[in-house]
Length: 171
Image (cartoon, rainbow, N blue to C red; front, side, top):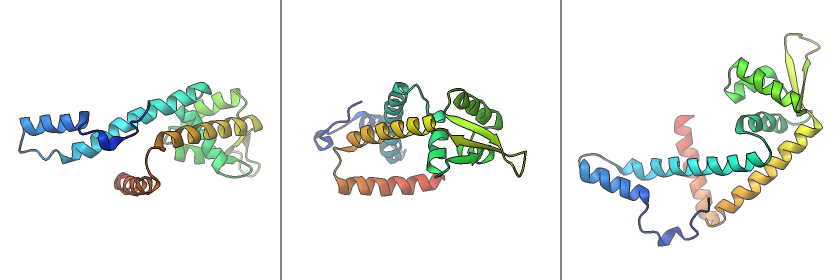
C-alpha cells in the first residue's frame, strides 16, 4: 500500500462517490458521517494489511505481538501475571493460555508459579522474546513513519488530536 503523495490534487475519491450516491437516493439522509467514518474504516483496512505483512516477515501475528509488547512495555523484569495479560489482551482465559503455550514453545516467554501464591502464574519475556519484539517494533515504527511521511508535522499533530478525541468516544 502506497498512500498518495499529493492528496490536495485529488478532487474526489471513492468515499465522495458513495456520499453522492446516497444523497441522490435519499436527499433526506445526513450522509456527512460517511466522509469521516468510511475513510477511517478504509484506512484501517489498509493499515491492518500493511501491519500484517510486516508481522508475516517475523512469522508473528497481532495477538502474539500484543502479548510480547505488553510484557516489554511493563519494564524490567518484563514480567506480568497471566491475569494482567488477560485484562489487557481482552481474551478469554483459554485464549490467553493457548497463546502463552505457543509463545513458551517458541522460547519467547517463560511461565513460573508465584512463590507467595501458588495460584498466580507469572509470565516473563526471555532474551529471545525481547529481541523479537524489539525487532518487530523497530520495523513497524520505521515502516509506519514512512507511510505518514507525506503529511506535514502540524497536520499530523492535528490528526492525532482529532483521532484521540474520536477514540475517546468509544473507550
